[in-house]
Every structure is written in C-alpha cells, then in structure tokens.
Image (tube, rainbow, N blue to C red):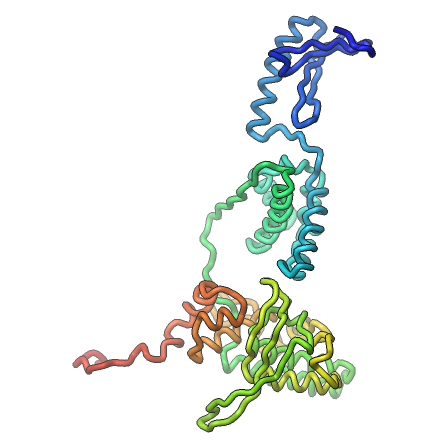
Length: 403
C-alpha cells in the first residue's frame, strides 16, 4: 500500500520486518526497527517475490548479528562516552571518592594513545577483540611499550566502558583478558637500605653546597628536596599525597621513648586530610619528619602553620632528584634484575624501615593507607630473615645442630 508520499510498504513475518519501495525507485528495500533506529538495506531487486526472499534471509542474519554483538546500533562514539566518563569521574574526585592524581593519569592515557585509536568507534563495538587490535597497534607504533604501560591504557578504557555500562549505553562489559608468553618477573619495590639512604642524604647535602657556589638561585629548591626526601621516608606518603599536603594538615605531637638507651621525649607528626589514591586518610610519622617540617616552616616564614592552607612543598624536584641519584650511583638497585628508583622509592623505604624495626604489618598498612596483603606481597616476603629477629631462638640445645 502506498502512503501519502508514494512509499509502498509491505509488512512481513507478522510485522517483524518490512520491504518498501520509494516512488521514483524501481528497487525494493528491506528494514526493521531496533532500539528506535531504522535498520535498512536495499535488496537490489525489482521483483517483489525475489525481494521478499532476500529480505527474510537478511533479517535473520541481522538478528544473529544483534545477538552476537556484531551489529552496532548505538550512535554514541567512544570519544563522546569518554567525555561523559571524565565528567562523572571529576565529580567523584570532588566528593573525595577518587583521587585527582588518578584522574590526571587517566586523562593522559586517553589523550596520548587511547583516543587516537578508539575515538570514532561506536561504544557498542568495543569488544575483547578490540583490545587485542589496540595492543597490536601499540606494539607496532611503540615496540618498546611495557606491560605496565598497557595496563594503564586498559584501565583508562575500562573507566569509559564502566561509565557507559552504568549509563545503560552498553549492556555488557568486555573482559580484556590478556595472555602472556612469559611469566611476570617477581621483584621487590626498590628502596634505599640504611647505608644507601645515608649516601643519598649526603649526596643531596653536597649538591646544596655545590649550588651555593655555582648557582645560588637553586639552593632553596635543593633544600626543599632534602626535606622532601626526609619527609617522604619518615611518613610513607605517596607522591600524590605529598603534593597535596598543607601546613594546616600537620600537627606536631610528642611522646616518651627510649632513644639510644636513654629515656627521652621526641616529636612526631600527625598528618590528617591526606588526599591521595584512596581518598582521604591520616598517618603518624616517624620522628625525622618533625625536624624536616620545622625547617620548612622556618624557610617559608609561616607564622601560624595551623591556619595556613599553603602546600608544604612548592615544586616537584624530580629532575634534581635524578641528578643526585645518578651522582651517588643510586639510580638503580642492586637487586636482580636492577630496579629503577624514583620518588616512589621513598615510600618503599619507609615501609621497609618500619618492618625491619619490628612494626606490625597491619599497623604499617593502616598507616600507609593500603592493605596488609600488599605490604606482605610487595615488601615483607622479600625482607625475609632480616625481619625475623627471633627465628634462631632455641629452648634447648640440639647436639651437633650447628656444627
């Protein structure tokens, strides 16, 4: 039957699909509606009977594609979904549920590598196969890409897909299950042992003296780096947390301790409102942090630290830190394989120092705003016998045991 504009439309299979013919075209088309969208295609046939046979076969093929996820009907692209996901993530950051540093990392991954590949693809078309195609693309363009880097890209893609799933844009989430030819190398987090840590501090002090003679304008930055290192290794705070800590977040407290065999009173810091990877938290520092904090307050001329919302550290002296690490031959650990050290090694040093001094794994984990499992798997099991002060204690002598 022809409508007002001359379109002839015939419903088939109880209206599940239809064929139609435009007024000025001799060919029949086939179509059906799915999620409010008209899916259609020309049969390239002029004969109605032949067109109906083609249409029925075409219809069932499309239904199969819909069930398998091969037929994409959404008009929303991955790029558009990414914008929505980032806006929603920003709101989570403002509510304290997520960290700004994690959001920054996701934005960098999306902009640098993910969006150039996925931006114009329909969001419903992203499948497990899409991930492996993306990996092949990355390895082709960047042959030296590391497994950890690919993991960051995968997380960025998942943030977008998870948000699209919550919005109802997609009905299921791909798994992105990787298989690797070789096992991941199991290695401890790089830290500074006591002698290396002493060498590091001496190296920074020597760098300060060198700058006093040749580049005085950088002395203040080197002094801040020195206190940053001490503060980081005495608190175990993450790099992102150190970047956010303010003077008003820090409180100086005192406790009675036995130090070097003598009873004394020592200062430590309680740091609140720590903003980082896991939202907000609190920690109790080791004693060296109080001394570093005092120097920072004096150098910055902060009259009332408890009322100041200024950041504790003005700059991120990564380049200078790397210079010192290379000059002191500390950039790489002595482990096998050698591990590269950076500011993250300060947190690792705090954790290892506390464990070696007998601190409870659970207490260290809580103070560092992480899990006991992470402390055990990434630190404790590598320190091994160094932690076990009583492992050789005996209740009775076993003759010949130690010969």
